Length: 106
Image (cartoon, rainbow, N blue to C red):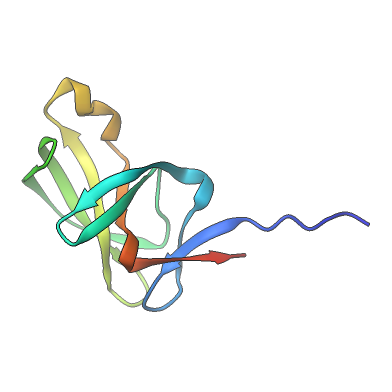
């Protein structure tokens, strides 16, 4: 009998809509204004807000807020453009605030 392998997933804390996979985490060392946050390669089932220039801890970026497509809860942001060459690796990546997501298995 084959063992079932369950994928570790992160879901919206509010409605449990699946947002990202544990395997998509790049870093758990990010910080938002409201606490810890994780950098992910991508997020699913989200809606992007308006792009805007923001000054963050590590520099100035063009970012957009990310909202759960089910309940509308703001979950974090997506890096659209980094002005500093050392921060270019963040472009296209997403930051999800830890208290806005929950770990769930499929």
